[in-house]
Length: 407
Image 1 (spheres, rainbow, N blue to C red):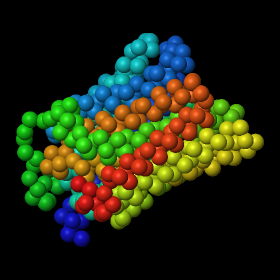
Image 2: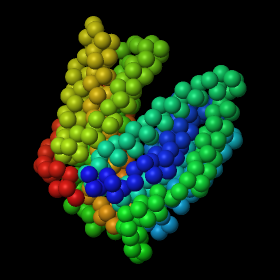
Image 3: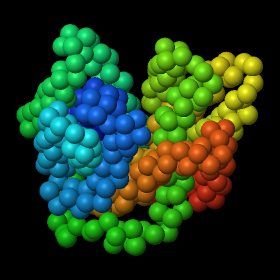
Image 4: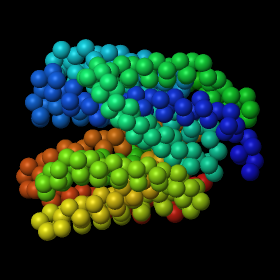
């Protein structure tokens, strides 16, 4: 238990997790309403979908400079800067006169989200003892999910009380301001941990750019990284294909919302279980079961579209996908942390997140293309086949041993 005594969990927990929770709540209040905001400025349905996708695209582009930025200025300064940029994005979204400006604001919010997430990921990678790494990172992922879950619960009464979207925009602004204030006021966790453990700061060297980092780590990014991108793609696809499937088989909006809400609660409830399993039995148990579960669920779903009890099948498959997704909580951050240089993880984590975010961004595009060319059922089956490829990749390249064998 020496590692637990060495690392001051209680001393830094508030500084590590609370800003992440508050930032997530602010985003959670705003992000689900981006299509409605687009409609308010005259966007078509197709254009509203593109504007909503700009968040994921912004995160993907934000991964490009984030590793070098965090390595240069440090985690705390990068997070404060990201919150300031997110604050500016919220204001831009609030006063958008037309769709282009709104899309730009959402894109900038994605950039800020990428830097904020990588900065906290880099801190956890450097300082959390490896025997508790998966649980700590799963908790970080769970806190983010909690914020995205609580945010819409706040925005609903705000809209009811204010009669429009303006109150939601100010909610995002408020949570950005509170997050920035906490990052400034609370003790810097990096300084606290170094003082407690005597661990020196990372050496100051020229940060690597994304292209150089990818070239130097091509083998691991092209194997385990691709498997991780498959997991990210399946996660992203579940968020898209369930509501589309509900529309396709004629489920009403209230039932669709209930399905998404119940399965979202199941997903959130499992975040810490995933970390415990990975720390106890090895990382492969956080990767293979979710891949098998999501892949099997999507393949079964593809066979149920025209069945007389298709709605019941949707409930069952949505629950299976939620369980599989919940069991994968933290696995992408944990694998990235295991494979990064613990003395200077930010450049590699930027490349790692770029690869996984590329998978997440590509998945909705794949669904749209296959659905247009064939059918929604074919899109679900295609994703199931991709999941099978991910199983093969992870089985081949991810070490079977305990966490110390991975890095």
